[in-house]
Length: 517
Ligand code: KIV
Ligand code: ZN
Image (cartoon, rainbow, N blue to C red; front, side, top):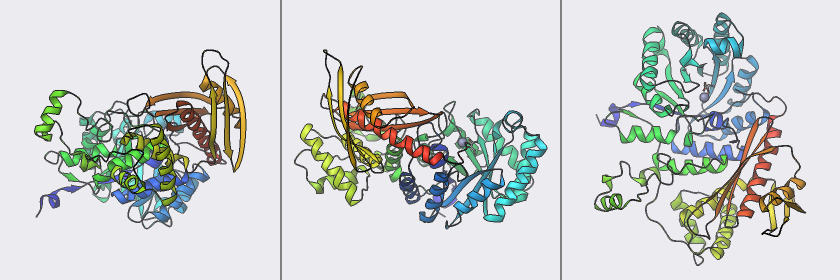
């Protein structure tokens, strides 16, 4: 028997498209969700939670479309403990090769009293009702006690037993508010598995939020306690401080196989690519020092470290960058690089673009090479990410002229392509950014408030591209747009327009039955 046959298989349940998308400002379009789902499927994710079908028509459509397209993974749709939610989820996953309904209800005293305003016995009845209804629609049913980690143990065990009796095949115990410490979460699974008489009839699952920065540690502890499914997201995207990061879990299990005797079906070579794609479509930048996929995760700056690395990479690296899809060789790009070299570069960086997107990206690369002598990998990342998020946008920036300087007032003249028509507007403002945003707002009127305007340089040097993020808030919902250009004003205008495009999509998506988890 090989070592890997002796290891216990842990299922990877990715919820980037559901819990991740619930992250303020991280909404994705249908096309973007399909792109992410296809990549998750290709990289070996076992279960893709594609959305919350009852939340809106847009969510329903996304889950249903992903269910039709995904080949290998199980596709799950989330549902509250209500007939309408469960029926919508069943309808959305019905074309999947393998479909799952994931239904949940709160079980903690706090949630039952204040959120649900229900007595525990009513909640108990609803669990049986909802799981039975889901099981009448699909064979694969997951049940979650929301705020499970703050639930009374006797009640939790009763509910888990009832859910399994009603047909649940997976029991997830979420740490909804990220309150656990590892030993406690491990003991919780051991306790439930020990006390619930039919616990051997279901797979147990962990679902951790990162409010105390313990989501990955807690997830691994839950597995040590007997769970065999981990719910996580790419880049740790998710509500508040996020969910456990898929890439960290996968690499911890791979790198520390001596202590964590499990295996997953994930091909880690896809991790960097998935991180970049999710960052691009959610417009959530990955922090530089993020484990596994951050820009600095494999960078060695200090002389002592560099010296050690040159003698033996293992002195300072516990994983090889190429194992997670970070290529160490770097093809230098410049204004003389042709289409072929550009395509090779994209492959090296882990991007696969269709012919049209490739052409657009190549054209933008040539423009950039005219302005900037050295094109670094980060420049190409920024350019492709821009291209990916701009592809589905209805309104686009065509031209921008800004008059700035000490004299004032600063002015901006912007031309937008709005549904195929070019429209131009001139406005003044308190500085060039304000003038540019005023001109855009005059063409795309809205009541949203600007909650973030952030600029950072993609690389060093005064000719570096500026990476701009713009976050807008409307009715408690946030959207983020992001763009990069050597001209900070052009990047700012594109990022603002991108956020407004998302705001329009979000409004359409929210109608008519918008609900939250
Ligand atoms: O965090 C949570 O409790 C959830 C449930 C819906 C599983 O996301
Ligand atoms: Zn969650």
